[in-house]
Structure formats: C-alpha cells, structure tokens
Image (tube, rainbow over all chains, first blue to last red; front, side, top):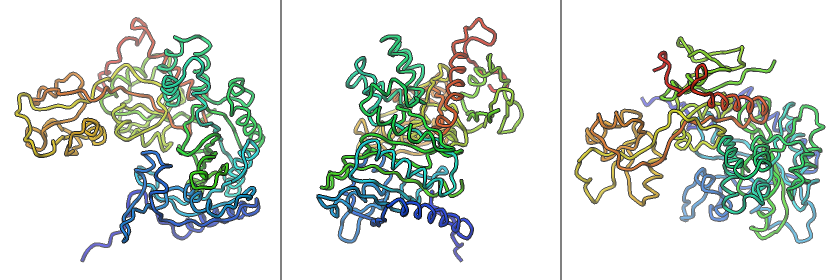
Length: 310
Length: 226
C-alpha cells in the first residue's frame, strides 16, 4: 500500500476550522471597508497568457512565475500579481471620458522561489485608484490601506514612504549618470562605511547628505525633501498619515521599490513584529498606457497571511 | 526598556574572528560557552541566535533576527537583498574554480562537471563565460569530487589554500571575492532605526580599535572557538 502523502509543496498552505474562519473574517472586514469607501470589485483570471505581462517584469519577477504550456501551445502563467492583470483586463473597459475609478480585488497569487518560511501561495487583497494623480490620491490610497488593516485588527503600524529614483536626484550635482546609479545602489544596500568614505572624498556637505539618505527616517519637513521634485508630495502624504493613532511614519529614500512598474511614490507597511511588510503600495502611471488606456494609477495590496494572525 | 536586538551569529568559519570582535570594548561580550543555541546578554540589550551560515539570511529576512553576520558568498547564493551596512575586514577569502593539479583536460563533447555547494554562483559564472556546465551539488568535502570521478572541477571557497593543496587541487580562476557582511532586517530598520544604526556604529567603532588597545588587533579566533 502506498503511504498517503500528507506533505505540501514548498510554500503551499491549507487552512481549516478556526484558522480558515479567522482568515475569512478578516477578509470580510477588509472588503466591507473597501466597499464603504467606494471601491468596486474586479475579478481577473488566475491564469493568463504570459506575453502581455513579460515586459513589465524584471528578471527575478519573471523567474518567480509558475508557467506552463496549454493545449494550444501557448505559454501561460499563474497569477503572481494582480496589478498587471487588472491593468490588462480593465484597460479595455475604461472609456475615454471615464473619471476616477476605484476598484478592488482579492484572490490567490502564486510565486515560486518561496519556502524558507515564505508562502508561495498568498491571498492578496488590494485596491487601486485610477485617473487621479498627485499627493491627495497617494494619501487616499495609503489611508485606505491603513484603514483596512485597522479593520482587520492591525492596530500598530510603521509606514515607510519612498519614491522611485529619489536617491539619484539627491546625489546630483556631485554624482550623475552611472556614478549616481552605482552610489544609489550602495546607499540602498545601506553600505555605511563604503559610501561614507566615497562621499567624504567629495565634500563634508555631500558626506552628511549621503549619511542622512542612508539612515533614512527623514521627517516630513526635512530640507532634503524640498530638493526633490516628488518631495513635497511625499511630505504631504507623511503629514497626512502621521496623526493616525498607532501609526509611525518615516520617509526613507534609500528603500528600494518593491515592484518594477512603480513610477513615483511608494510605501511599505510593517506590523509590530515580523521581518517583511504586511502591505505595500505605490504609483504606476505607465502601466495602463502600456495596455492602451493611459491613466495615472496608484494602489496597494496586502497578503492575508501577514495580518490574519496579527 | 526596549526589547533586545536579536543577532544571528554564524557558527561557521567566521565565528572565531567575529567572537573576537564582540569581545572588544565597549561590547566586551565573552565568547559563548555551552551548547545553548540562544544566548541572552541582557546587560548589553542583545540576544544571539547561534546558526548555520546558510540559515542566517532566512532568520534575518523573515524577522526572526534583527541583524546578523554572513558571508557575501551565502548572500549571493541565496539571492539575498537585505541591507548590509558593514563589511568586516576579517574572514575574507575568495570563491574560485579549482581543478586537479596536472590533470588532463576534460573530454570534449560533454558539459564540464563541477562539484560545489554554491549552485547559483557556479551556474552564473559558467553562463557568463558561455560554457556548458553540469553542476554536481554537494553539501561539503567538495574537494574529494574530482579524485573520486564525480566532477572535473570544484567551485569552492579558498582561504589559505591549504585544504585545496592537500587534496591535490590548484586554483584555475577566481570567481569572486568573499567577505563577511552585517545584514539587517528591513522591519527592524522600520521599527528600531535609531537602535539599529547605533549598534552598527558601535560595531564600526570596535573595528577601528587600535591594535594597542585592550582587545585590539586582528580578529583571530579565541581558543574556545578555534
């Protein structure tokens, strides 16, 4: 008799009884909050052709995909991210004169390369605000993210705000082009001694600037932000969030963007424990244009497993 | 008083010099004794987890440890993108391609067989060179593989070269330099930014202690760990 196999593939998870009830309860509270805020649900397929997604993925994101060839010989991929899927399927439905669109989604995403305590299968819930640009929209989506986390019982959060290409902008004029890119990468990796000695060779002021960028934790009124085109917007979002109870906000321009399609403001939310963000979000103003419906867009998503036990 | 910072301490080849560094003032932490894998040093606000080197990135990335020390070889092999504020001057070595001394070239017409425990690093190296390689994954004693007919080459760390020579191997090419790094969890940075950077600065200062100071000088293994 073949022994019954009870183990799961690396990173897969099953939930029953109380745990399943807790997860569904958290999901219902989140969805209720999103609906109350005017977000309407969209459902996208769990498998789709790979080709439309490939240009929007970096090498690592592409490697994480679960892909297969269907009976017609087309390469398909299991859903690893809702944002691109939503842009692909929603773009065709957006009319030219459509104003602001608020949409939310929920469902499983699958990413390979997990294991080591990470889940390959994750239940994501997220929301997107389309057709609006600027700090008020960024603040709305960040507030919405914290509202749904609070609805699910996450009371204490640390929010890190960042912006794409901010480091390169703040390293000018002393460093530009490839030099700025290389130094920005090392600052992003928080290479303290290495960047300090390089910056000290330029000037004491540059060394101080690099050090503050490297340590992060800038207050909304930090003069560095005033030098950044996106700085006033970041400061406005930081000020807008900082009054929330249980919420600590910091601007950290050394934080790398978590998705390659982000084009500006982005954020990560950490809970009271744990090493990885429980929610992430950001602005991706180029994504809908790639699917034929140019629209500014900002959104967030959270993994239910990151908060159901919080 | 805030909770201790949790430090992932690798028990591999950099354990000795790292213990020597931690023994310097102002931390002045005595080398760990006993078999416990958790060591609390409450008066310094630190908790140490004694881990295998390859497990350090997992503990730090997942937030089970706030920070830790691990070789750049392990970080590259595990594609770990954790912040790494400090590189240590001790425990440096190189990751190299090794071959049996004076061995005939491997037969043409088949992929080179390369024994290693660093599958990703070895594969990337041969991909960059455009050379087909059959990677034989081993978890240790890789120097034996050519002698026993398992592989044509070995890709492994070389420090003094003593083990390499003792097993009849010679260095064909350096693949990359390797140095221990301090890695930090992003959640710890978000929640305890000041404490984390204060600790990093303290370690940095301890690295700069002059050899004439008490506990100064090169970080060699204390007898309890060598």
